[in-house]
Length: 545
Ligand code: FBP
Picture 1 (cartoon, helix red, strand yellow):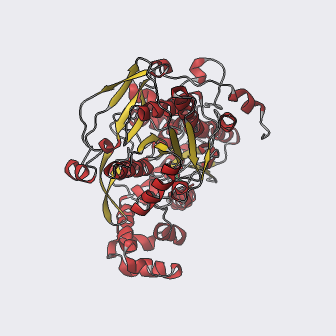
Picture 2 (cartoon, helix red, strand yellow; picture 1 turned 180 degrees about the horizontal axis):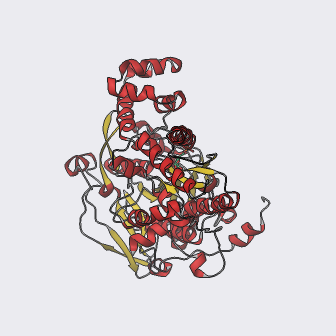
Picture 3 (cartoon, protein in one colour; picture 1 turned 120 degrees about the vertical axis):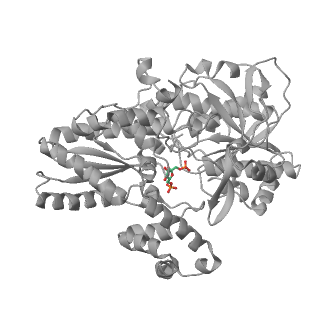
């Protein structure tokens, strides 16, 4: 048995809370038929077997005999705190239906299904991982499940193991794939159900039905603790500006939530940059203006939060990336050797995009052009925006100094918080939420559902009052261009500039810029006063107000 810290030992005994409706036998309440958020005709045509199904909710019901069945589970994409609790909820859920039910975990993501790599999750193994961070019980991966060949290889192992349903724990891309797989198995009458669970620290898998993706709560609390500590350090030494990049591939939910928790001097929100059509120079001028104003009052220090995806939201760079995606999607481009690709790309870009491309530092340009993940996304976590911005701010300040518009000293420190929070031990909220999502998935399976996402709502209320049920994944879909082609995908939830969390931030940011009003949230607490241990994110509190 692995050696454990005292916290791990104590935390292993935590029994996550469940909504009242899931504490005993359930009955299914079906709502109205649904439709997709966009492109209804096309999505209906692509998902004839799983389109239009009703939203379902569970209520307390009568005990029914449940026949024995086996389940498979896959962890997909980036780690998010609470993944192990989704699995423990699923495990306890299926065992409560029939103690002979078995849970198999496919190893290292969707690739494990295709390559037939799996383990049985036994009670001993499960107990080692309850309430722990990470995805290491079975590992995760980013293989994209989209080819018929992969689905067919999958069904071979699913049949061999007698698996009735597959649970895919993932973000928007992985749940899109879960939906495609559900449709394929339904169309073929293979008798295997597919259920998704909303995971991602990025917080962008949310909509009318999904209040939050799991892991966002813990990751933001972890980053906010660190930002608070940095705030206190910089207010003590009074000599550095800290440029802190925060994960969140596309949306700025993490940066916004951390700003609400820590009150930094500057926080950029990518969605606002796009809406205001700001250029890189506009952003740099904005930061330099605040640095100069603070220097004017003798404060040569501060904190700047930068969302990881910022670069993709600057309109000129967004246009460039869109053309790069098209240029790189052709067979001709794929055949070009890596060392020749930059020249190939330059020869194929339009004049305006070529000018933008050439204006970027070489390393940033090559990141945009060359490095993509299996879903075709630019790997923004590899782009050092925090250094790019601080360098440009230093240059701008030097110019302002010459014009007599800035008197002060500017020294920068750089940080990137992402991996520090993705595997943190889940907060009480994530521990309960994830366990409930997994347990709830077992009830969706028992109810014969496929192509559904497990959802738990009313999450700012005590856990016993949470609402449990399922939403057809097709309901969240629309068509978007991916790798040069229109594809059905789950619509990503970006920060809404009309939403309450952003409005609260916007109403306070000028004050936070000049005054030093940092908040110090401290580390996640598991035991103690409920207002400390069980608090949800500020985003959720403001959204549900
Ligand atoms: P998911 O969308 O798969 O949950 O991943 C989220 C994330 O943590 C992003 O914030 C980040 O850009 C990305 O994963 C980094 O992934 P990787 O470590 O695989 O490069």
